[in-house]
Length: 146
Image (cartoon, rainbow, N blue to C red; front, side, top):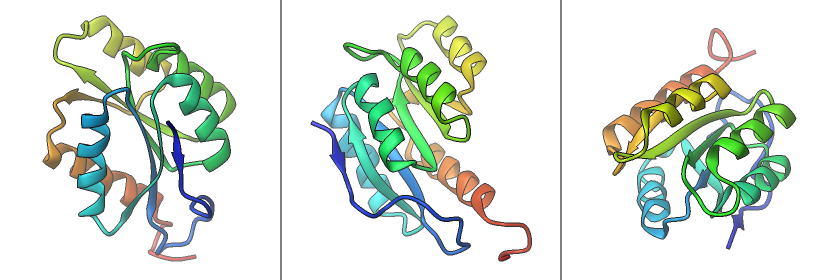
């Protein structure tokens, strides 16, 4: 079931939290990422989705700064959703999640379609934290404020 947090999209204020949408059919992965985010005061989960169709809908409604999305999911997979997200919301940054057993060709396709990174599952919390830090820094205006 998708979850949305009202009033959590928008703006480019320098003190704004990095908003993240998490998309994975595994409740365990969703919980792990939410746990990492809850420990990071610069990042906020604005929603979760269990497949690509829900992800595309949530991106259109919530306009997150970053989407973390599994490649292999039921119904609409992550690559199909990535195509739609990049087509409809080209400024949305998307990092893909991939099981160790997933084919390298899917990761290559994700990069070709516009993914900024492909993270291996199980998620390394340090790598995820580094991605959040990179995206927070990228979202800040030059010179700290404008």
